[in-house]
Image 1 (tube, rainbow, N blue to C red):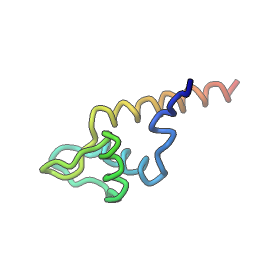
Image 2: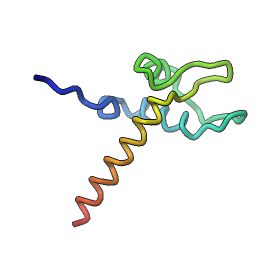
Image 3: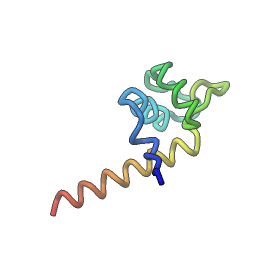
Image 4: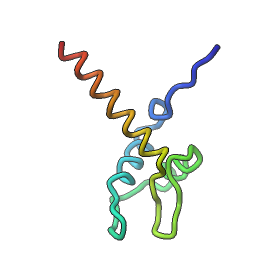
Length: 81
């Protein structure tokens, strides 16, 4: 039986940066630069979408970022011991 890696483990640095930038974007405000090819790849994974106001993070994308942060915190706590 194979186990799929979490998407956040398979994202390139530019894709992860694009996802973080999209997460920081506030409605009605300009966002940080988003790499178009990275955003397109995120769209194919269901982590982002192209809306009328530009690129947007999806709920699935937010969940992946939250899991990545939680995993980083757990790793940091384990390493601090």
